Image (cartoon, rainbow, N blue to C red; front, side):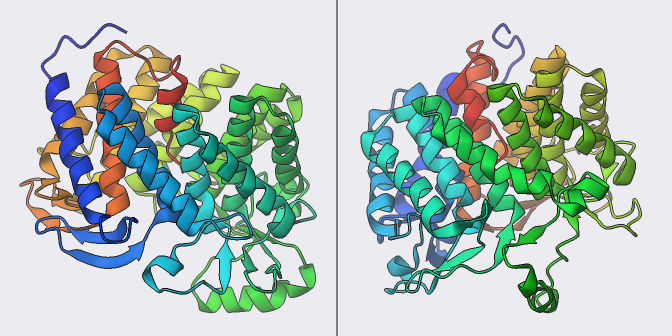
Length: 459
């Protein structure tokens, strides 16, 4: 695609915005070396000091890639040191990460696999960009620990007791989806085929799962020890969690499909393509209608309670990817249907309403929706989608802009800030949109640039 002809932010303005946001992240992390969980965007006050090294994937790759493309060596050095500090401070004896030692001055009782989803996503993305030896060794330690301490019968335990090394008998579907995809990505970068085998092993139990075979949707969780199911299901229900036979579309099912797509791309094994096709047909039949979908499905579910924008953008990426890899027009049509549904809710502020009639927009869903419009525009050959995506991202960066990064929620009509406190990871995630727009302005496509394709994903 040629560089934009319309008037958007200049490259220098995007560079200055990147530096401004990066200075906020650096300032927040000075005391402990870890980003605090939440700050007040108008004052910079730290609201929650809990470190978020586990959330590396939500900010570190964007700072690193931004430092690279804007040729800001000091920023790449800062984030590289930040990541190495995270590895030194938070990578546990079982390979996975925790940050409780930093803000509670003690080790946790359990290490949770799902809390490490964004960790490994971040580490692999960082290694793709910087090829740092210590990062590579950390990833290898992570996957080795996953195999040794967390996996039994190809199922990933929800958590492991750090002292006794005993596994909880619950297997989390979303953690499986994350780890399976990152094993593939790491294998592709390093040319180590053993990680492909490990990825395939993680997916296999879900393709033989009873819920999958009956409904062609993936369950919320499985049990390593089926005898424990009754007790844990009761306990989880009390905590407000969905039942194990519930199919959560975003993130669980969508991310499993991303892994299946990647496995097919690498192996060309038809069973992964067939699984994607079965899943898509089941999704259309059970949860989807006219551009919207229900995010949780059980046998008695009806197509009610449409998912918000915060969930919908993942499905745009999902069907765009399915079309890109399998070339079935029905996938492109569904992706465009979802996009066109949400385009109706672009407001006077140039941002998208989170739910029909709610009156507000949220930062992260708008950035991601803008990126998905650009992605779909590339694949479908529709420049209007690309320019709308750029517009939504830049309007969001302007409308949510605050003294210390960005606010979280605004009024869709007036632009008034409705929520000033924000999780710092969302300040980092906003950089993603900025970088995608910058590279598009240089004539680069998401597809065709491995680093840009990697960081543009909704993970």
